[in-house]
Amino acid sequence: MDETKLGAIESHFADIIWQHAPIASGELAKLALAELNWKRTTTYTVLKRLCERGLFENQNGTIVVKVSRDEFYARQSEKIVDESFSGSLPAFVAAFASRKKISEAELNELQAMIEEMRRGEV
Image (cartoon, rainbow, N blue to C red; front, top):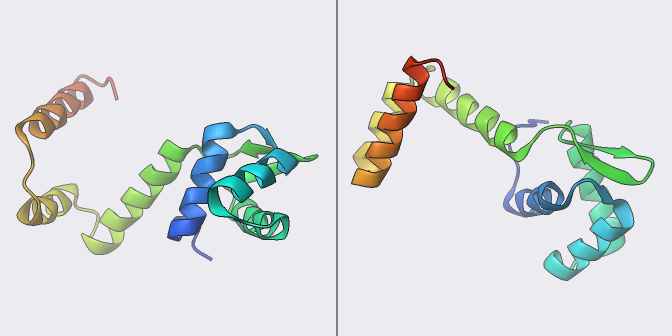
């Protein structure tokens, strides 16, 4: 199973965990009921899958994060660039920009990130 991909529902559930962790499994079941209308068994089944993927860990009934949300999405993005653009970030950006206009604010943010990288700050 690919740990870098989550379906929409799994992603929503993972976001709940990332927002509240560490969290008692019983409390997580209550949040999943409120936000996803899930039964306790569904919560624990999906939680088990996410734990098997290495994202979270159940430590005596408390769910803790093993991979942060930022790290997870960084890995996912890296895999997309590697698989779809032969690892070329410029090719990815070119493909993205050909379909979606990049705003002046976004260009400035990207430029600032590039400058930070050149200075070794990232």
